[in-house]
Amino acid sequence: MDNERPMKIVLLEDDISACRKFIACANSRTDIIFVGITGRSDDGLEHVRNKLPEAVIVDLELTWGQGSGFDFLEKLYAMEFDIRPIVVITTRNRCEDLHAQLHAQYGIDWIFCKLQDGYSPEMVIRHLLRFRPYFSKRHGGMNPSLKTLESPEELKNRILQRIKAEMDAFGISVKYKGRKIIEEAIYLILSRGEKNSETVFQDLARMHKTHYNNIIRNIQKAIYDAWDNTDDIEALLRVYTAPIRKETGAPSPTEFVYYYADKIRRDM
View: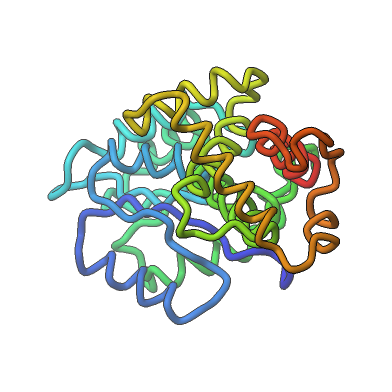
């Protein structure tokens, strides 16, 4: 498991002291990372939905928080996942019948009683990591590798960073307003699968509270200035390999944003 990315964990816990111990445990190692910590059950669900953790640690009682561990589990159980997170309960309740019901009703993977001898956040983390290979194959090995599992937020950031890198390579300066608009246009195309450039540019005009033609002009200026001011046109043509119309001598806004959207999509 040395080549795996750090295990992403969401912690639903309202005891500040317990949270600090979990954080200290995470800070002392490189194989786990808490992507969400909250004492509110609704916020915990949002963290799970947006961050796609590999594991969720749930304080069942939430005495000082908001909601309850039971509310959280019911809503979590109703959610659909490509890979269901490992679910671990921490509780002060020793009732074996309750524990059995939690396992049966919600498919809980582990229950740790906070009153048991030797209990600690480190114990919980050690168990998660020890059995991580088993849980990564819980659906018969048909799931994508956990190395490549990304949350929507991580995927968006990766796409945006790739777009920025392509614009840097093309030579469009960040000082141009058109660069930001180009980046937004490419992202809209990728995230929506939008095939109509007019729709993309109209949406950008609404976002920027300006006229459609201003969006086109800003994009054109950014492209043409980079094209005209380059000292090495051959280098530029190596990063932009689409055919160039003789009558314009440079890509049109539509040609440009769709070229890069297609290029990035192929590499995703």
